[in-house]
Every structure is written in C-alpha cells, then in structure tokens.
Length: 103
View 1 (cartoon, one colour):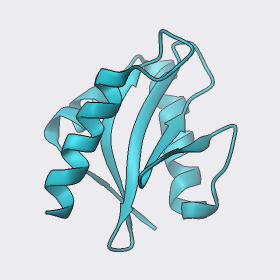
View 2 (tube, one colour):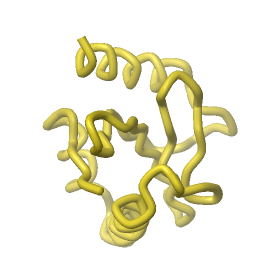
View 3 (cartoon, one colour):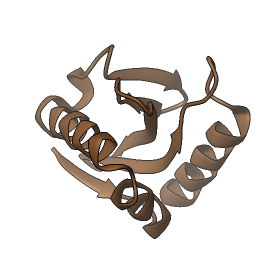
C-alpha cells in the first residue's frame, strides 16, 4: 500500500522529528505500507469516522492521524502526544483535512 502525505505541514512534521523518533516513525510507516488496514494495536487504532491513529512507542510519543482513500493510506496530521487522550483540536484538524480530501 502506498502512503501519501496530505499536506506539506505533515511532511515537515515528520522531517523535523528528532532522529530517534524518525526511526520509530519509519518503522510504523513501513508496517502500515506492508499491513494496510490489517495493522492493529499497539501501532494503530481506529478513532472512528474513517480516522485512524498511527502510534510510535518511543519517547517522544508521536501520533500520525490517517485515513484510507482510493487504495492509499493518507497521513492527515501529526502531533506529539502529551496527554492520555487525543486532544480534540488535533482530531478536529485531521477531520478538516479529511473533509477537504473527500469533497
């Protein structure tokens, strides 16, 4: 499965991640490429509404929010996890990008 970054902002987020975190991101992105929608916890979980969370387990814990669209995994948004739950503003931003992608 191909992976596509929906915005330049998400590509920049990945490119500017600390070296160790980039290695973790590369690993989970590779898993997503190989397993697609079969990828499960601890690396991926559904957030509902066609939105999924790709998770790194190292420190810092990074999250990439993504969807599946036209046979591709589309990375919509990324952030550093600081709280137990995914912050609403991060979900809202990813859903906004998802709406613009599908409209």
